[in-house]
Image (cartoon, rainbow, N blue to C red; front, top):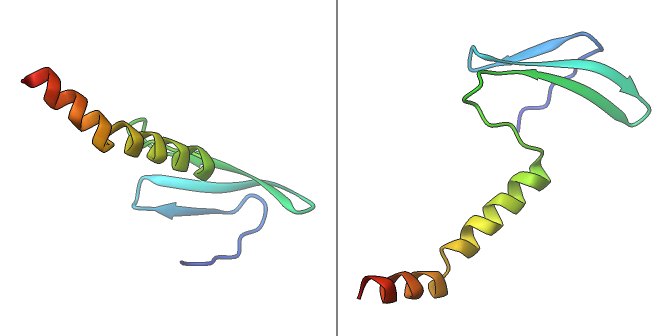
Length: 72
């Protein structure tokens, strides 16, 4: 993991096309802004993890067996 220090109004650039800017600092919270191409999905980590879990459940063994039964 790369750890960087930024102040309010400062940014960082990822892969030449994603810019993350510190918008506000209030106590132990920060507000960030993200500029990225529309085809780049951006999720909070807890939402991303839930999506991954649901995707894994969707391709579980039971789901594969049900699909095989449809094809037979």
